[in-house]
Structure formats: structure tokens, C-alpha cells
Image (cartoon, rainbow, N blue to C red; front, top):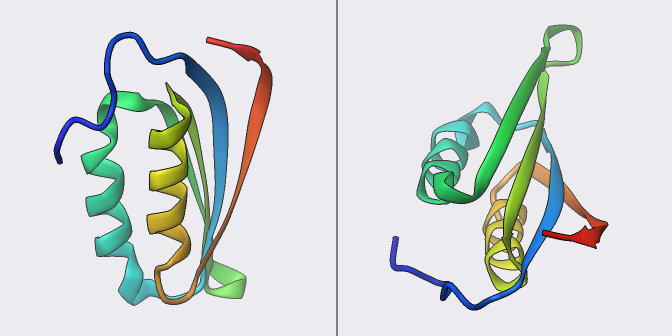
Length: 91
């Protein structure tokens, strides 16, 4: 992944909530998250076997454009829904 931010950019704290309903999208999702690993504070995945889906939360400390790019890529995956929330406190 090319560097998308400069050291002078203001960082934001955010969380992306992800619901994966299509298991075929998991490998692509993991590749995307790997590309943004330098901005990920933490990640929690919960398999919901009874409903055959996974729930993932990603905590980030990154510039706004990075968070938007990651969220956009995740949201375009087949069978994957996501929503981003931001802290009011700037990092």
C-alpha cells in the first residue's frame, strides 16, 4: 500500500463496525485490513455461527482520508456491511 498520509496530518480516533454475511469476502477483507495495519489500534472478531455471519470491530488512529479510504473499500465488498463512528477527541 502506498503511503496515504503525511506526518503533519491530524489524526482521528474511529471505529469501523463490520458485519460479514458472505464468507467468500473474508480473505479480501483481511487483505485490506492488513494493508492498513499501521493505523489499527485493535481488532475484535466475533463469529456468530447460529446466524452464519461474523461481526468485526476495528479501532483506528489515522488521518480522516485514511479512515474514509479503508471504510470505503470494506463497504464495497460483496456481502459486507460497515459503519464508521468517530471520537469527538482528536488524536
